[in-house]
Length: 232
Ligand code: 5RP
Image (cartoon, rainbow, N blue to C red; front, side, top):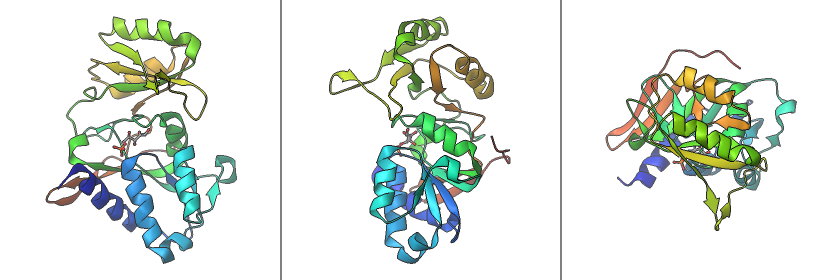
């Protein structure tokens, strides 16, 4: 199976967790796009949900095309589930996210959900986070200072470009991708980087880790259950 076929498989599997009458949180990326497509092809379920809170402009567009009511975060107190992909996920449900530059909104929506269901293909499962360049959303004027801080940790930070210009996120900020990190303690690492001035969001999802991962493999979808998370 190709990676895209695995993504489609797990996108479809995630429909089993969508209940009628609830508002769901929806992430961003090619795996999530498969989930949205699958939702669209199950008209009754698609029309049956109360709405969705979206994590990006791109996801909002796709959901609206299906006629899903896209709600703002202030219209919803909590979400029963948040469905999103990951760039890496370890055996405790800690993740690296932000390959699609939507990490800040993803973390906000994830923090509102009782359950984070990560949908991923088997290439994303790692023993330790850090192989995938870590995305960090930053305020532009802090770029050099933050890059130096990562260098001191053994990392190499590179400003993400789009069409030869710094990529601008949905929040009007930039992204640094940091290579060469080995993240032994995701919770401690997330807390440390979050405190650096100019960091908007670090792409380590430790406080907002997954509660479950639907992992697409060539033998089918495996369900990895992690310890329950508390909201916030
Ligand atoms: C976007 C993300 C995505 O979940 C992550 O990049 C995985 O993407 P894909 O499903 O395309 O492999 O964090 O910001």
